Image: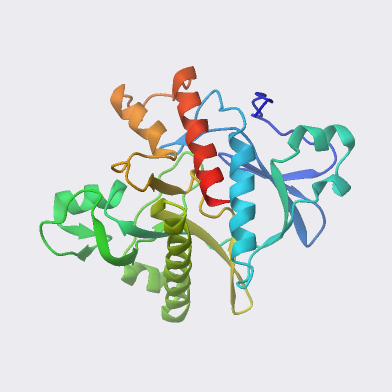
Length: 287
């Protein structure tokens, strides 16, 4: 990709900014629609790095857009990528290929995580206690081992700067009720299985991912992003669980013994190249 511009701030004049997240900026188009801009900001451990990675937002947009179209038989917030009609020329050039138009919904305050393999925080919890989200699992499972079937391990959706907290099924029921909890878990696992089957044919393993949903009357709406390297762990078949996702950045922070009491350091240029090449690889294989 020829353009190595890093977009840290979208700063659009044409529309009203209604939310600035760790990576995405949301602008109001009208009472029913929003523009979602994927910047090149990078976050890890609920903090944002001072520098970004050029074109990361482009690949996040392209991958999410692909999956929203792939799952168009379900209710999603995705409309299209035709942002040009809502923006001035200068604004459009700033966020071209980094944004899409979506229906406006209020998100459920929940990270709906599905795991096909035992990795990340689930592995840490299992290693320490034999439990994942409060549920006991069989003994002697190994790190990155494929699970007998995908599991639903939700967490709270924390405010920026705060940490998400894993919650049990019982806690989820107490917050959302049995019926909605069942709808969320069943749809999450169904989508995960379908995406995993497709990805496997392309030589990609989806180890885990997270979804966000909104509720419109009695219908669950898939929102935010879908199966991106920011929200998922990807491995390539035959490459011994080498990450092609944001875990590369988390692992780097661990390797330099960074403490979560500190601000995040700047991402090193060599790491930026590895990360963006990994995101491009996943994009090219899946889409």
